[in-house]
Image (cartoon, rainbow, N blue to C red; front, side, top):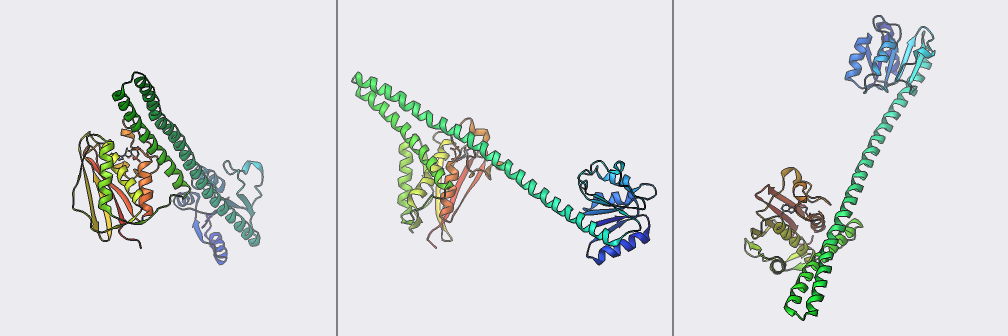
Length: 372
Ligand code: ADP
C-alpha cells in the first residue's frame, strides 16, 4: 500500500485517483503527525510526501521515520515546488538511495514511473530480507548441529574407551592369575572382560545403526513371528546380563503372530528395559504391559525410576538428546531412544513416553499387527 501525505485535500484527491486508476492501493494522511501515526500502525511499500506542509514538513516526517525500525527502509518520493536535490536534503538513514523527488506541477508519467520503480525496489528488498533471515536461521541450526556432533564425538570416544581400558586391565590380571595357575580367579577376570566386551559391542552396534539411519540404509527384515516367545527370550537375556532385576509381565499372552523384524523389535524392547533398569534404583519393579488394541500391538515398559521433567519429554526421542539433570550421573550417548523411534517408525508405528519426576516412566510403542 502507498501512503500519500499532503495537507491539501485537492492534491491528495487527484493523486489518489491517479494511483488507484493504475491499481495501486492507497492510504492518505493530511499532516505529518497523522502520517507518523499511520506509519507506526501499518506497513507501507512507498510514501509520497509533500515537502511544504505547515507544522511538520516532509523532511521532518522522513527524518522521524528513520527512527522506526519497521519503516526505515520504506522508499519516499518527495513532492515539492522547488528543486531540493542538493546534499543537505539527503536524509540520514536513507542512504540506501530509496528516495526520489518530483517537481510540482507534477508530470504524472514521471511520477507513475518512479512509483512503480520504488515500489518494486521495496518488494525486492523485502523478499531479500526474508531470504536472508531464513539463511541466517539455517546457518544457526547447522552450527548447533555441528556443535552437537562434536560433543557427541567426544562423548562417544570416552564411552568406547571406558570398557576398553577395563578389558586391558582385566587381561593383565588374567595373565598374572594364569601365571599363578589360579583358575578360579582367571575365570572371574574372563567374565568381567566379557561384560565389558558386550558393552563395547552394543555401543559399536548403536553407532553403526546411527550411520545406517543417516544414509537411509536401516533395512528391516519383516516376517510373522511369535511375540510371546520373543518377549520371554528378551527378558531372559536381560536377567542374565543385569543382576538383581525385578521384571514382571502384567497381562496374559498375545495369541496372534506379529508382523515385523523380530531382531529390531527385540532391540527396542532391550533398549527400553535397560533404560528402565539404568534410570531406577537397583531391584525396583519394572512392569511390562503388552496387549492388542484395534489391530495394533501395544507394549509399555513401566519403571519406578527418576522420571523425566515434562518440558524435556518431547525431545526424548531426538538424536543425541540426554536429560541434562541426569546426564552427569549416568553414562550414555543419547542415541538409543532415537534408534528405537526410527525402528518403530519403519514398522509404521509410534513411540511415546509418559513420565513423572521421581515417580517413574512409561515408555511405549505401538505397531500394526499385520502388514498392510
Ligand atoms: P542414553 O541412555 O544412552 O543417554 P537414550 O537415547 O537411551 O540414551 O536415552 C536418552 C535420554 O533419555 C537419557 O539420557 C535419559 O536422560 C532419558 N531416559 C531414557 N530412558 C529413561 C527412563 N526409563 N527413565 C528416565 N530417563 C530416561
